[in-house]
Amino acid sequence: MFNLGGQEMMIIFVIVLLLFGAKKIPELARGLGKSMGEFKKAREEFEHEITRSEDEVRIKEAAGKEVHDKA
Image (cartoon, rainbow, N blue to C red; front, top):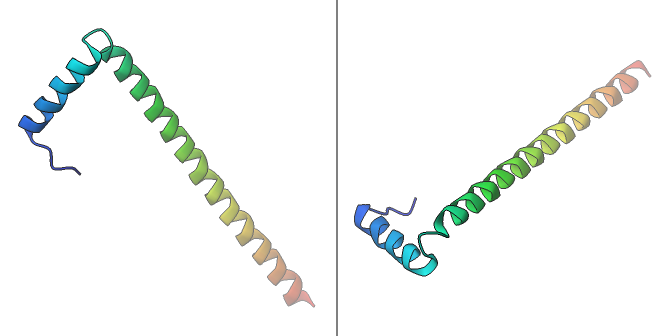
């Protein structure tokens, strides 16, 4: 994605360590994990709603065709 190598990752880790300190890093990682979990959950709910809406439209179209064919 970002084409980061080992050296770049090490520099980023050192900067984060200097900015937040060793005690805050586990809290930040925990918060990041929770936020990613919430994002994934919201994305799955959104996809489910889209799929459900598509199914409802197909059902209504099929019902409309049956009524039209009988007339």
